[in-house]
Length: 72
Image (cartoon, rainbow, N blue to C red):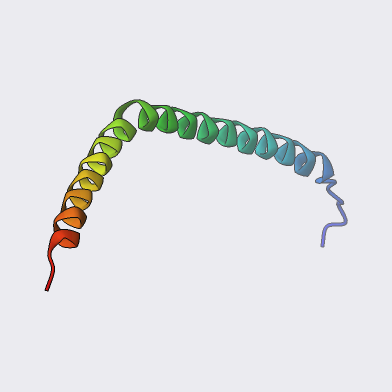
């Protein structure tokens, strides 16, 4: 309308540069959080799950031996 042409390619390039850096930082942060969660799982939760699994396995073995000794 006024005959002015505004070149926004510089603004677009600056915005894409900032957005790319922001996404890389967020991806790095997400990776770091997932790594810390995995470490905590290995140290805190996995031993308890293993203990419960071993107990369940022992109970089923006892039940199987009692069931196999039962005859009709």
